[in-house]
Structure formats: C-alpha cells, structure tokens
Length: 72
Image (cartoon, rainbow, N blue to C red; front, side, top):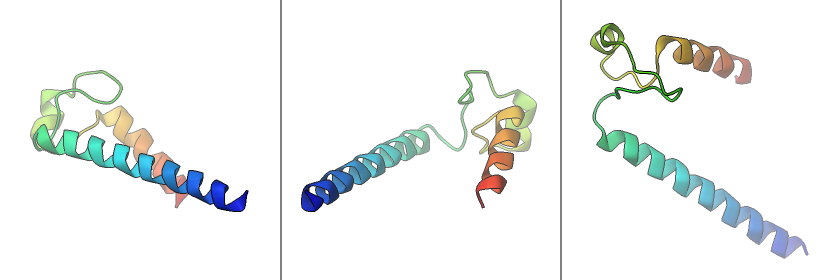
C-alpha cells in the first residue's frame, strides 16, 4: 500500500512539474511580456511601457505580491 501511494504521489508531482514547465515555455515563447493578463484584461500600454516584462495588470500583480508575502 505504501509503495503504491508513493508511486502515485511521485507521478502526480511529475505531472505538476511538466505542466509548470509547459506553461513557462509557453510564456517564454511569447516574448518578454504579454498583452493580456491572467484575469483576461489587456495590460495597459503605459504599464507595458514602464515594465516591458510584465505578465499581469497592476491589480493582479498587487494581489500576487500580497498573497506571496503571506506565504513567506
């Protein structure tokens, strides 16, 4: 039972790594930044000019940073 559990956990971990790597490559292939945020809204031209590598709008970036601080 334990061996099967660890095997399934390992497979799940590998699937998550593969998905994260796929998403990373997809974003990297699209250039230094993106035109559309994860929320579906366009990233404003002024933001893209100020931060060319931005991948989130200001609101989503703020939420990301606040959430990340809570996790640290």
